[in-house]
Amino acid sequence: MTCAQAPEKMFRLDEKRVFITGGGGGIGRSAALLFAAFGAHVVVLDRDLAAAQAVGNEVADAGGTAFAAALDVTDESDVISAFTAAEETAGGFDILINNAGISIRRPSTELSLADWNSVVSVNLTGMFLCSRTAARSWIARGVAGTVVNTASIMSYSGGGLHPNVSYQSAKAGVVNLTRTLAVEWADDDIRVNAVAPTWVRTPLIEHLAADAAQMQKIRDLTPLKRLAEPEEVAFAMVFLAGSAASMTTGHVLAVDGGYLAK
Ligand SMILES: NC(=O)c1ccc[n+]([C@@H]2O[C@H](COP(=O)([O-])OP(=O)(O)OC[C@H]3O[C@@H](n4cnc5c(N)ncnc54)[C@H](O)[C@@H]3O)[C@@H](O)[C@H]2O)c1
Image (cartoon, rainbow, N blue to C red):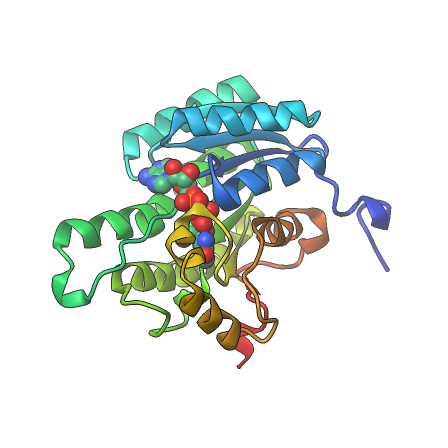
């Protein structure tokens, strides 16, 4: 076996700097804590600055290093200035976790254009804007950066528990955004991958956790018969972002308890 370093170090992220969007809650919070535990310096970015700062403090309390900043991923000038400022403070970065996401569940005939646009803007356009800003910086600095996007099992499904057309369309777009940028930036040594989680125990689906019938449906649909925990998604992100995945690009890793295998 040929490894760039000792095999047990291949999952370590020492000296790596990671930007995590939507880092103020749910999966992003778990990712911040886990990337720090693997040695990375973490920049927690969220439109909710107080939430980002709280996660930054948690990382620091756990012995890691973190910087928190406000960022709305849908705002192009905000993305450019937040990345530039965070780069100046953190000294550049190597890993981008495109994780910010929202959902507006409504029958398609009742979904306004404004709601459609806001879901597509956060879940798809925001990932493009952050990826483009990162790649410009990496290409200019000769950094072999890596991006991990958060897709969903709903990237591949027209089903689910409720009508959710804007989310499912945007998340389907994330899969081909991932593949297309992976191919385009391969010559620049930039890898682009994604995770596709099943239902994860976070505030995004808190309405489901209180509904016993829906929880039973999730168990019935999932071979492993449970929701995912946010840490289980974060572990997949750590793998894809690190040296152990050095030959993996354009891939979407399902973290779904077997949902997509059925
Ligand atoms: N929870 C699930 O069941 C599930 C399943 C599959 C995929 N996902 C995806 O995982 C990602 C994280 O979701 P979560 O469950 O942790 O949700 P969450 O609601 O717990 O956290 C999302 C975070 O994103 C932030 N955010 C929202 N809009 C933003 C914007 N415009 N700019 C910057 N930050 C913004 C929020 O403030 C929040 O802190 C999302 O992309 C979501 O679609 C979640």
